[in-house]
Length: 112
Length: 112
Image 1 (cartoon, rainbow over the protein chains, first blue to last red):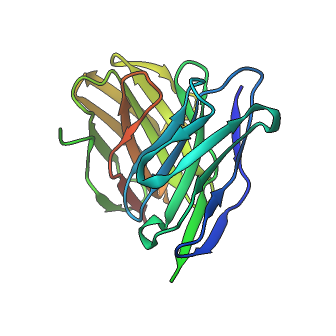
Image 2 (cartoon, rainbow over the protein chains, first blue to last red):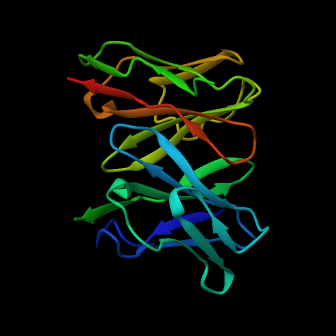
């Protein structure tokens, strides 16, 4: 069964600097992987998804993620952080037919 | 489209009372998911339905929890009797079998 691990519970960056949120997955087959964002008191929203079409996936709000099979990683990046990016970010993978399993989340703080 | 609609948004009740949470999925979506979110355990999948049929309820904590989906546009999650440890935010999500879930804004439950 596939599982995902988010390596950082909290990441803090300054506005205008790059963002890196790390996610590793475990699976014996090509996975379907996702990044979701959750703003305070809101539900989760899909940022991007990987389904084996291309290893570099572009999402909304300038985010992108690269699937690296050799490292079993699917890290989320953004070149320049904006204050509005402050939120909780979840990496997720499919387990079984369509059971989406989430990592523990990474809280992103943006410093002015 | 109005998105996934959940009610109530907030519920405060006393231990032992019955709690019913409601969800209206996005029209045309054929899968519906109930998740629970707490600080300690993160996002946990409780149960999901496909074409109104429960597919996997292995995440339902115990017999006090039950979920139904009588038709394609409505689902309920019931807790009877409720306990303080059930306090959490309960999310409903729907999808078209693509792995991309659309979440409601959640129902925040506090059991005193």
